[in-house]
Length: 150
Image 1: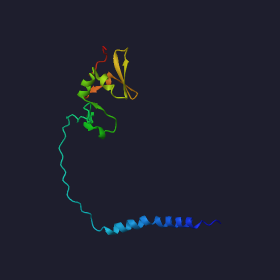
Image 2: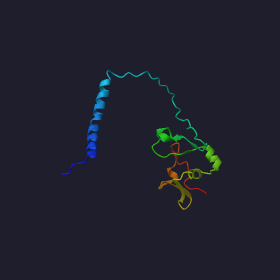
Image 3: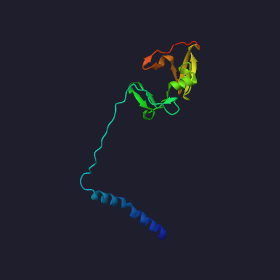
Image 4: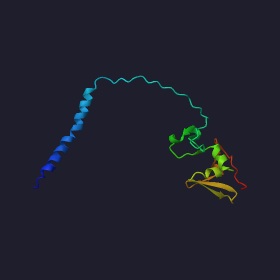
């Protein structure tokens, strides 16, 4: 039978003694606190946000910090569980965009293609085809023409 060396025995002894230490610490802390904990008063005040207000503009002025998410209302970019980009009027003017396709090309996950005998636009967003019939403006569908001229 092999007997471990003295340094190995001391290490094993120190390890075994340290296992019980957290249990002793927990009982000591629990016994020091007697009675319920009393917290000080807290004043909370808030203003109701306007549901139709535009989100604040991010640095640079070309994108906003949030946007309208249909029935979810206005939401900040950091509070949304998916990717969202809201382009501002300044970006549209600076870019001299002629239609929504010119604006959407700023997003790396959006590609523009032609469909229906090259008479209409199709957007491919993360691999999913989106026709002009699928796009709405404030919940109103059919705002884009089915067939374009250019």
